[in-house]
Length: 365
Image 1: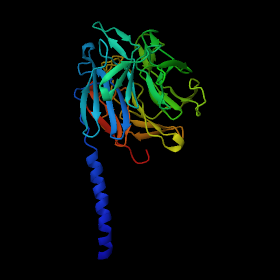
Image 2: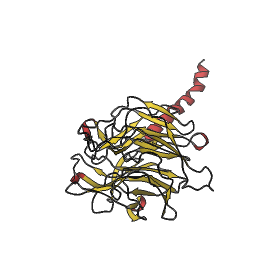
Image 3: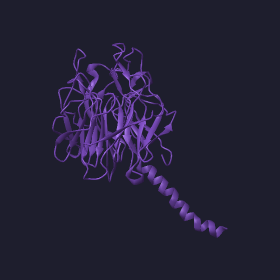
Image 4: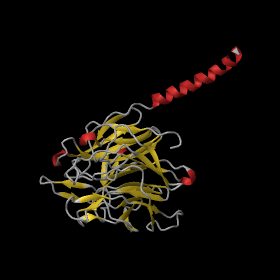
């Protein structure tokens, strides 16, 4: 018996050392340098680990002059944030979308708010180069949008799906595709259902999923906007020879939970046959503008439900019905080996937070 234990001891020691080294390699993630909500977020993966980015958003006052153009980058080896050069423009923005690809981060659209509270959607495409702490301008978005869904396809094409546009005075059906190699835009098959803004979704493999959002109240101006419960799946060409602008849309059943607006969403890692899960967390069932007060004059509160769409089975899955410290007012969700990460947002009571929230995933989720 003693001999067996003696032989087993080095193995056990090695096992515990590996656990401790892994823990040491993953430092605690610090809060943002300042509370911010409705910030565009992105994640890049390299040999040094996952780098997380946050751009613009609104501060605790939740007024026009609390909107910022600040930019932050999280260093994976320290868990600390570094303030980077602000996003170009005369003012900060809300409702922008961001995607990291290779050594760059692409930041799309959003809207600015003037001293009178008037909102204007912008056509800007700003590209951040982290290694050089600089931006350059990409080709403007053909139909300027804010509060849109964004997704990356084939490590080249970025889809900008729906959203609100002051150019049209309404939510749009446009699916706009940016070719990062050619700095060029094309238009894809439009959205099939009710045009919405503040919806949530992503691209996983050859599958687009988006859910909910808000739209103009067809019954009148009170409230001005109401929540949509529509969920849609779009299929992209599964071969490199296919036309990426041709999307086959199918309506999906309702997802778990009752959140309908500004849910955090993001794609996980590919699993079976290149498919994986798209994750959703938080959000609210009461659409609002930028201060957290609903268009129905009632305060919006975050949902505690975290769920996923399994692109392989094409079914919804409940991840956590009682997510601790839920948040809303998000522009993305970041999937890492630690779990689902949300940067900033609004907590209960419409409080803007600097927290970096991590939702743990059970094995196999």
